[in-house]
Length: 254
Image (cartoon, rainbow, N blue to C red; front, top):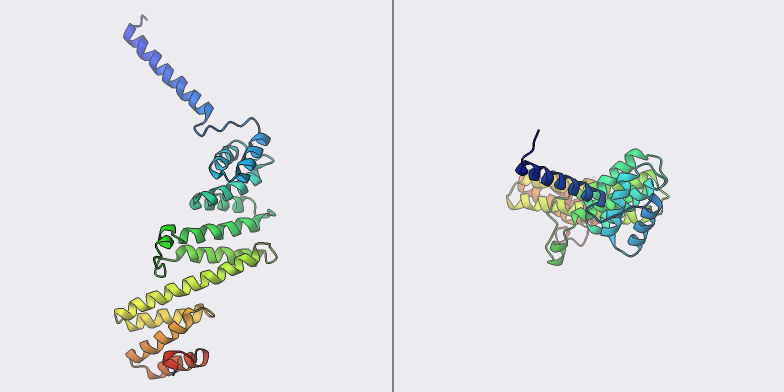
């Protein structure tokens, strides 16, 4: 069949676009070219050492895709977890962690994975700009802090002798105070609305679940106030007795 000049030109243009697309795929949008798994791994390690986390993650992503079961596969994933974390891409880091822990339940670096999971969730809970502007984060939803606390707890339970365990314990103390302060902030919110039962329940949750935190004293003081407003003298006296025993310098204990 004879082809017209216009149709021929259209075909050539379509062919050119197709070839261009193929060439683009071969080249890779990130500019990463892997000669071999060893070459890619060494390049990624060098980028990590220099603090070039974007370049490192580009290489590691390519390796993770091209050599998912190679001799470097586990270390590639562990490095990718760190590279994402350092870039502030916490969701991607957690995604790699979850895949790694699921597929490698007996790996020797599993403690590191749990530790990094906790660090990522802690970072998700912190807002750089809020900290920069000194905005109070007490009443901010602490769901990521709860998850981070659980991550560190899992690490300590499964690997009590891990080199990351001591730091994890210290972070759990911080997180425990963070969660206690949140419950206290909610209790104070209910006090402002004169929702005394709800306020008492939140304050009691601090007393029961977050012992040895700075929020304990204020929670007990709130309990005294709430039970007074509710007209429950027995519970008020009990809360006051506990407050006086543990915090004799409290204004309500005088």
